[in-house]
Image (cartoon, rainbow over all chains, first blue to last red; front, side, top):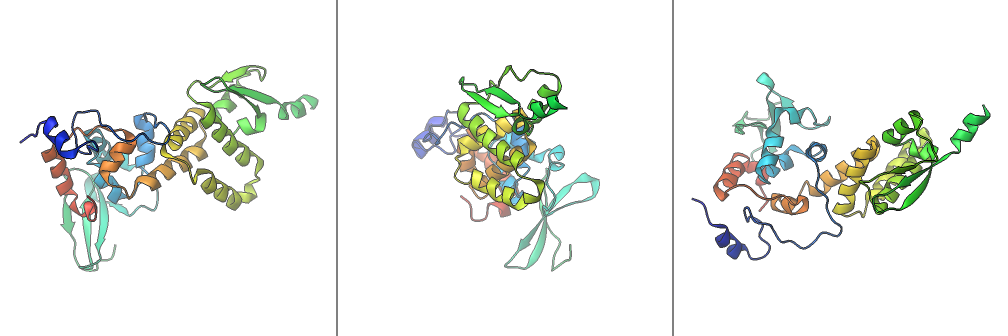
Length: 122
Length: 161
């Protein structure tokens, strides 16, 4: 079910972080942040760790599209902890310190977490 | 022979979007592939080169970067690295974004790399809601859609609002 914007705005007050389809009012940045064309947005996002990228899929739909795009993965820099599985899929490895298990996260849609278990060597 | 020595001392005039003019030594300007191509194609150094997308504040920063990198010898990579991190250290987001745009327009690969990396380093541990603010991005998800994307990447959100 969809909440009306007015309801969300009232709920969140002025710092309306999850307000939808409404111009948001924030304290102005120290200097004006210009619009960044998509090509430069890719330049910036391709330098992020995969964990940040997965979170930033929630920023907005265009970001989800960009980050999920298989073409995007070729921008990744060396040294990033990711492996390429069959069928060109990109996986990220996640070490859970509590259970000491390594999980494999498929980066591209459908994003699912898969246990590959134990202290498996990568 | 004499003319090539003369050319090395040539200066160019660059004009920012807000009308300020900058006199730049040619070897400094050559850090920019855009300017290099213009010089190669016989653009007269007497001409004023307009940079309509770059304001004076940003252009001054860009030229400071170019001068340091043009003057340093290649053996001083360590010195350049510490210059780079000092150069970006206290820069706010607006200035960094303007630098990325300017470096892209003027084709200064090294500057584009360090500025984009600095932005990435600044946002990487921030909640996505804050990243929306920084990039002035409108959230076009319904709460349900956002929750679904979040659920698929639950581990990435551990410790985040």
